[in-house]
Length: 274
Image 1: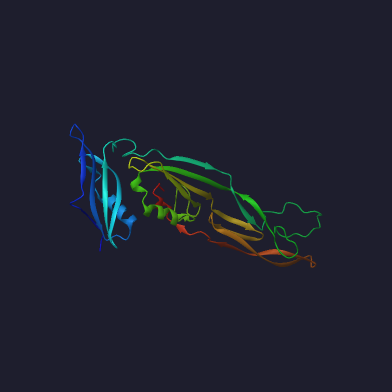
Image 2: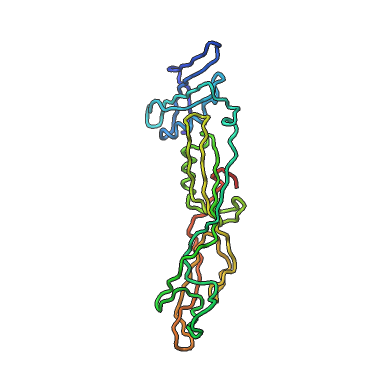
């Protein structure tokens, strides 16, 4: 059955000032067919009136769990919060930042061997750190840009469901164009959020963190060419023994693999634009 909400006809309180203006009100409701307290609050927040006798909704509280899927809640209204102020209908502009500090990646294959000493030393075809058995490789700084956006959101937007969405998208890569970058270039690193107060006039400050690695084409790996690699896919190389000058054993790239290591998801679900 679908969730529903119905007013309770007892335990209702309200107050007025000397001028006859309502100042506070506590209006009880019953929420049916919801699985837990979070779901009850979220459903009530989406369905109770925002205003009661011209005073704004300040908070919703769980009073009692009547049964496994029925809850009694109270909508609390309090004068003093103006929905027309900037903290009401409007949200402050986002704050953007970025840095190009880069990231690291372990490479076993160079772009090019520019020199070897002595000149008669074996040519390993770009394999890095070959010790006679294994290609050890090296960690290098790669062109990665980190950027973040801080948004100021109304409390009704930052629900339990929305927080769960952020968690599920963390560690995933964009499956389509996002923030001007092509599919596969943006990795979502997660978000941090904080809220100073507990009334509806207080905004959530949420910072979303990303990393960008550009897609590449026609990557040379020894005598091989990798036609395409998405930014956050992983490229690795398989080596095999080769004999140079009929006497020197070296390692030669015989295959290159591009692996998808991050799930592709719709980062537009974050609700901060594509």
